[in-house]
Image (cartoon, rainbow, N blue to C red):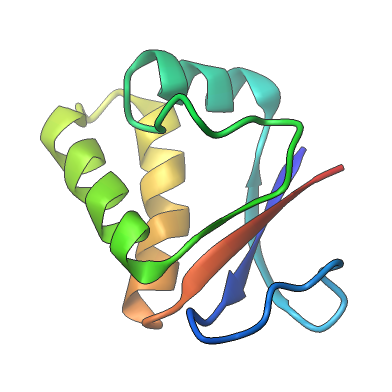
Length: 97
């Protein structure tokens, strides 16, 4: 699973999630589906840790909102993660486990 944690833009990147607030996770299939749908940019890898700042989150939310259909559970799951970060004015860091 790819686990997402809140991390503020100005906060130093953590090597582990021990002091961060867990939000949710995505499985490999969902992540790959989102890349195929061009919601998640190709430069992000499921098996590598990465970080999205608030600007990237807004960009992905905008793309997801434009392509979302009510039956697309992949996009709905990602939007839920991104919306939490956006509402809290925080970035996200993802750790692959």
